[in-house]
Image 1 (cartoon, rainbow, N blue to C red):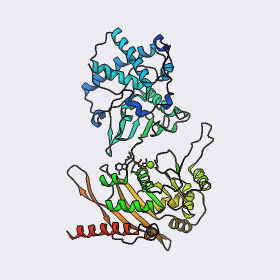
Image 2: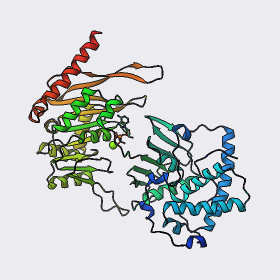
Image 3: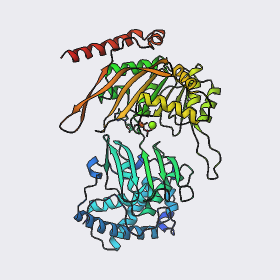
Image 4: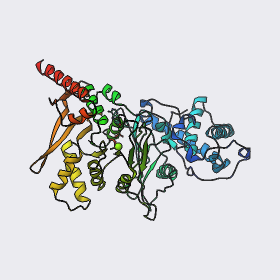
Length: 499
Ligand SMILES: Nc1ncnc2c1ncn2[C@@H]1O[C@H](COP(=O)(O)OP(=O)(O)OP(=O)(O)O)[C@@H](O)[C@H]1O
Ligand SMILES: [Mg+2]
């Protein structure tokens, strides 16, 4: 009768409204988890079946649009009848599977009563959409159920983009209207005890599976609420996988492993979504098991495998504007917790000063990420963040501090073809006059473009065989490995040039 849709249409009330109870719901049910304990990844069990990437992409023709309209009308009629006959608050206390069964029974009855003609598979699709609206995050459920999506970006009720395979694509996911979208946003943020509305239109939250969420609502978002989700990957990428994907050469990866192991202070720089947090997570894999590590993040994304880890998270102010705990507060507190290493998810303000101080005062092996497009830019951003933090230090003093704190800057980038590469591994050497001197050890060169528009390039050693951190490597018995990796990279480089 009509094509598959992931949206919900019609004049239906919001997903949280409470109509009268239905007798069949009154039967005793097993103890159910609170809705807030439900995980988005349970979507499978809720019936949100995995779909392929192409399944959700927007390829609508006018005929499809007409079919969608019919589908919306039917679905909205059924949905209206459904919420007239069930008690949603009671439903929320039930286990997912029982709630689904309950909805299935009632929807079946409604279809029969209204004499709607539908095939079994159409009924299943409809049921899935209705369950997603009532029990989950509505049209977002199929996207949340997929593991290959990196980001979900909803721009108002009619446009939803995803990032898949490094590319940003428009999907066929739509919300009924702005109110429906706001309802879903509200449902997400209420799980972490927050509210989003005109009064507090900006909100950060986390899905139960750990995905990072940001909502900005009207009037600040002019064309309807904007919802951005960075999907949490349970299986974080490893350094080996980065080598496999060509993000770094095997020799470059060995140098990164050594940097993690020998307690070098590392700053990971990159643009938005370039893979900074992923890289930071990779580097932390080489921290020794007995080191006491403290992580500070705005939204806990890192997954350290070591046993002796304390994880800290900042807190935004409450509705009255009170109770905020900033990254600075966390790092300062960290210093009283006897950390051996401090890992900062993202440095974006005056806390950079505290991180540098920590790096400088016996917390070797500390790491952090920062938004910048090159290692040079990372250094100047660091300096300007400290200056803007209100420290009236001469810039030379700040630079000296940077030089004595940071050993290496690793630059990550998302290239225009969607691929993610580590474009620089650069050492911070020292000062020459008033200028910080850096030295690239590995760089990524773009050589051209293939017939599919994918960039071709190569990681190249710059010929450095004895970086400044060789001494450190010796201390940790990694010098031989470091020399071997760098020499191998240099030999490959010469062979390439000789060809
Ligand atoms: N080298 C890589 N190859 C393929 N995918 C990657 C790579 N690095 C990261 N990703 C994926 O890209 C997405 C974004 O990565 P990540 O969260 O690390 O970026 P980020 O730079 O920290 O972003 P933000 O600036 O928003 O904090 C994730 O889904 C991650 O799995
Ligand atoms: Mg990040």
